[in-house]
Amino acid sequence: MAVEHKYHDVKFFLIAIAFISAFNYYLTYSNIRFNWFLVLTYTIDTVQGWLAWWVVRTIIIYLDRKLPYTDRPLKRILIQVLVTTGAGLLIIILLTEMVSLIARGRTVPISFYLFDIFIILIWFLVINGIYIGMHYYAEWKRSEMQRLEEKKVRAEGFSVKHGRQNLMISFGDILGFYSEEGYTVMLTWENKKYFPDRSLDKIEETLPEEWFFRLNRQYIVHRKALTGFKRTGDGKIDVLVNAVENFPKAIQVSRTRAVPFKNWFQPTAKEE
Image 1 (cartoon, one colour):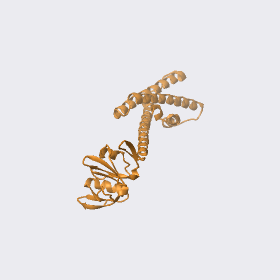
Image 2 (cartoon, rainbow, N blue to C red):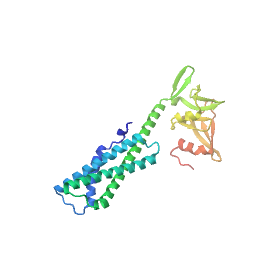
Image 3 (cartoon, rainbow, N blue to C red):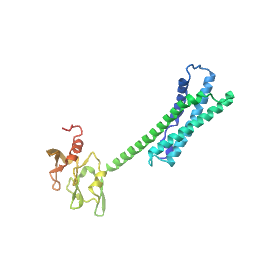
Image 4 (cartoon, rainbow, N blue to C red):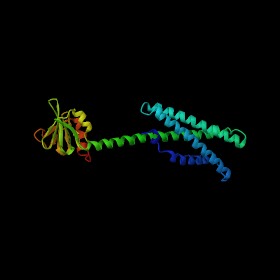
């Protein structure tokens, strides 16, 4: 994803800065007279705000390329805030002084540096916060899309080699997986065995969590193969399996795995 496309911000800030400029007038002046002079000064201030924002935006996009968040996010945020705020304030000061010299023939009053600059500084911090939020929202959205895409791919089934064939076994046809004498075995409801060239740890990462559960080091079982569980003491449970000959009728689950299993098997039930 190109960094420029991460921020859908232009229309938002064109409107927001116009509003901020009006709000600054409300904070700065107690007696505002609506006339052509007010319209002119408001227009000039708004254009200055747009120019300063565009400089800030350009710096942020440059930093996205040269100093991405993934390397050192705190360092990136600190540099971004300091550089963009400094550049933005410099643009506002230079433009304000230039307009004052052209229109009035003198520099801006000292009150501008004592009061107005403080308000403008706060708005630059707000703008930085918005861009930082946009970045992390875009990252979250990207990861969610990736997760959904991976889930969609996984929903097709489990890929396994069988002789010279590469087969895609539907998840609904898989009773479970288990380890036996150093081999990993996949068992179907028809009692067919396949031998994936992956460990149970690796297989667990590729399975839909809503369908399969890792009961212990030896067994991963499909939800439809489970009929219930019974407590055995010390927080452990025996999970009851609708078994074929290659699966036991009860599989022990440790105390640390018992609660996650109950929450997965009966998500609406409350733990006693």
